[in-house]
Amino acid sequence: MSEQADFVVVGLGAMGSAILYQLAKRGVHAIGIDRFVPPHRMGSSHGETRITRQAVGEGGVYAPLVLNSHRIWRELEADTGEKLLHDCGVLVMGPGTGPTSHHGKPDFVARSVEVARDFGIQHEILDGTEVARRFPQFLGLAGNERAYYEPGGGYVFPERCISAQLSRAAQLGAQIRTGVKVLSVDQHGIVRVETSSGTIEAQQAVVTAGGWTAPLLGAPFDRLLTVNRQVLHWYELDDAAAYGPDAPVFIWMHGATDVDYLYGFPPLPGDRCIKVATEQYETRTTADTINREVDPAESAEMYRRHVQGRMAGATPRVAQAAACLYTVRPDRGFIIDHHPRHDRIFVVSACSGHGFKHSAGIGAVVAERLTGGRNHIDLTSFAIARFE
Image (cartoon, rainbow, N blue to C red; front, top):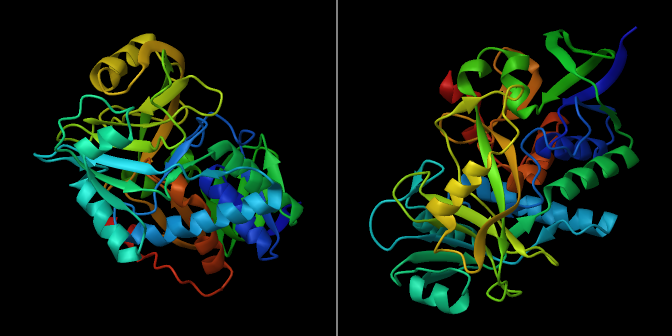
């Protein structure tokens, strides 16, 4: 006999945990399912920290989502006692001359400034000389760099955020099934979710399966979503003096293309290493076949190309490294929309490597939309129809 629910959320990472929590807040009967035990290291939501920036250079359509996320994380901190958001500031920096690109968007510094002005987000515009004076961890600056500094940015703790939202969802009545694989999601009047432990029938399903979305749902997602392997590196510091309490997270574009850059984080309290990474979009993989082991040669190449001579005190000694997934849409944007053929299946995926900062806000807007509430955030830019 099938189990019944109002909503089933498939995948409980960044997006799924946020949506399940927000559905539970609204008093509906919701079941969340994950094939692993979140938070885990198999998808896109691990690695201790994720950058959050309110003036999102990818476009002003994202700003309401991240602003709402900050509000929700502060509420969760008050409810749970967990530290989820650390506003140490964020620095977005590019060269003084020549083209740059980040997440497919040109002149990312100027775009960040524009969004900050449009939404009244506190910020400063700095040159390389001022960056070097205020933030001595950055080396080799020419002085004419252009930088956007946002004091309200910083980083969130992804594993803590997921755990806090799932814990609150359960407290509010949601049922959470881990170690359960979803085999299919189909709509025949109502939605039937076939799992490794039985069938669930629901009024609506929300698929937030990240890199597993396309294999689960098939067309058109199998041609719209690609999965890229990304690598995070933690390098030991021989001197942490340059990384004081005001050290920001950063995005540093030092060349013309999407891969000519690095991003990173100051040492966490008690640590003597910095976490840094770049991105790659050429080599594709799948969620089930990704190589989760990081070859030491990958960390050596990252250090040589991006870290050496740029980060004070950073040595080539690797404290740890980890691989994760980017599920990427053609325009490096998001999908937040109903399945094009099934009006009771809602899909939130393809967050293209910049989704975690928005996840709590996305959870709220999706839950509000699906439960018939008033939506104050326009999701048109995230519709799948633009690629149909």
